[in-house]
Every structure is written in C-alpha cells, then in structure tokens.
Image 1 (cartoon, rainbow, N blue to C red):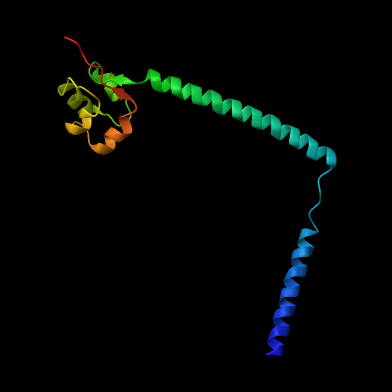
Image 2 (image 1 turned 135 degrees about the vertical axis):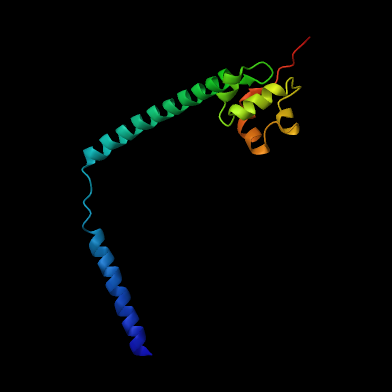
Length: 129
C-alpha cells in the first residue's frame, strides 16, 4: 500500500514539474508591444461597434423597404420573398383579398413553417372599395 502511494506521489510530482518547465519557455512580450496591441484592440473594438450599429440600421431599413403587401404585390414581388416560389405566389394571388397576413396560414395558403419564415416580410393592407 505504501509503495502505491509513493509511486502516485512520484508521478504527480513529475507531472507538476513538467508543467512548470513548459510554462517557463513562454517569453513575455516587450512593454511597448503590449501598449501598442492594447491601443490597436481599442481601435478595432470601436470600429467593430460602429460597423455593428451601421449594419443593424441597414438591416432595419432593408426590412422596412422589403415588406410586401400580399393584397397588391405582383407575382414577381411575391417570389422575391425567401420561401415563396411559383406555387405559393400563385396561391397567394388566387386567395386575395386578405384581411390580415395570418390568413395565409389559417386559409392554408402556405404551411406553418413557411408562414413563420415570411411573417415579418409581409403585410396585408386592407383594400377599400
């Protein structure tokens, strides 16, 4: 029993000393290099934050611009919506008018999974006669 404990202690000490030996091989960067890298990282972070804000504004503007009225859209406009192809575009046109966009799903014009994909890209404006 003592031999096993001594062997385990010896192996553990070898592993620890090997780890310390490998850690000693890492060289610390020069103080000037750390400062320059830190300033570069700050500049990159600011640029990234600005790019993210601009991208979000652009996506919001694109989303507003790409909302399609299912009561008045042409077949080509409907087919431009991701998830809507020839068949669904024809069914949407044939089912007009719609009181609201949820009727695409309730009238079984498009399946639920397709509706979930397009619901933020369509609107159903009520046509006044």
